[in-house]
Length: 93
Image (cartoon, rainbow, N blue to C red):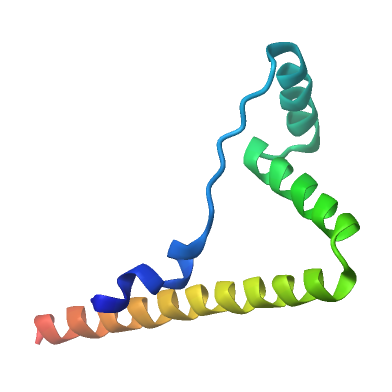
């Protein structure tokens, strides 16, 4: 699959964050109190910061593009599962 590197889910960016230990413990406690994973809470905080510090039109466009890309990921999964089901059914006959 030549276009594999352009697959929507492959374009996500990953960040490693190092924190000082005592403030990290505060963050961990905050995430646990909220019932969220650390990465989810980091993401929410970063998105909120971007929304507040980037002009509204630019942020809105980026958010819409992200949502379209995520919908494509979901559609690809649905199509993949349907194809796998057809292949399984054909093997049975």
